[in-house]
Image: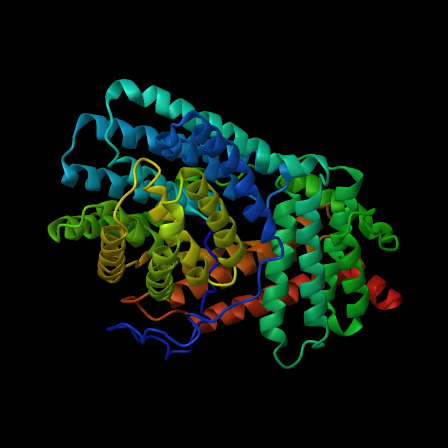
Length: 561
């Protein structure tokens, strides 16, 4: 149940100094448009099947399919961290499993202590807010907090006694351990696969920009290429182990950076050829010697020695989003209870799934969720008679829907929801066969309630910190630029310092654009400083070009082009 990565809208020009007194027009065009499938769509799809199948089939053989809810909690952890290098993935998956078990423990304990639906909905809303904040702060990536919220919210309404909680948590932990093994297993065959994919993506993006020679729509492609290069560096710097293949990948990423700085002197086809080789299973291609500039890659060690930003600092700016999630999920659950719907956690999870970086993206996700769920309910009506043939067929259908959801959701969230919805409905039948009509009615009602109430909460809870984050991002760019300029003025900067400063400035410029684009979709805030953002980007790119020339990479690229 990964969520497709949302496309953040570009900043629209507004007269300087004016404040927004009302919301902008909500987009409809393009919300349901299908994109290209992700490069590795099959990896989470196959991983979730490999992770879910053994526990469920074991429970089926034992006649205890009613316990599948607890094993699913651990099994679904296999959806995470597929883009991370394996050393970083091992840590990330371990934290995901622990986070899943923590949410499950709170939910099961609450369910064992009270049956008051209002209290349980409140607990579920608070859990969803915490899960949302932590997933965003750690940038764990798709499927983010949605799967965690689904498991914890559903567990709140499963009859429980306090004595059963340890055993049920043990089932989740065992399945989580198996999910960790499934997630790490491909590393035995292709240990540098994630880094290679990230590097290939950077090379292709740089080649696409170089084809414009910096003209036409080059500005947009330059931002895309810069973001791809930044992502490649994040992948390469996420682990301290620098093997020979990794060093070769670092040099290829430097080549992509040079292409962004000097597109007219770059051969795009050579970059694409390297990208094809990197995606393969053969040796990492080694570009011609970078000469003295190769020593500048010592800046990698400089960056590896810098500690990451503390978690509590990353959580602070997310307070409005967490408040939106808590309020929206709680109100959605309360309204569902007031309407007499028997499964208020569906409304809660629907609301939780909406919240994105800003109100505009939240609206788009709401439209996608409603469309996908309604079609998915009709799909369930077709599958329900098959599922009732036997529990074995039920398990196999759920596995097929798991695969379909991960295979399709990268194209657009609503397309994947067509498989997620019937799968969630079928999971409720693991314990006992239920009336399809009742399930379908409850699901439709909770989808509409969750979407409407959840979006209303997003509009009501303003995120004025978005503007402050732009100011912080502008300051970060200026500090990084001043550091790079200082090193440019130095006669002999320390080894690796200029390369490290260049990557820090590049990352700050990318972060500024992402922050500005996210803030552009927020409502009820002062006008954005678009002109300052544009000037900061331009000066940042000029400084980046100067660092490349100082390092000798520009002349080297031109000589070999």
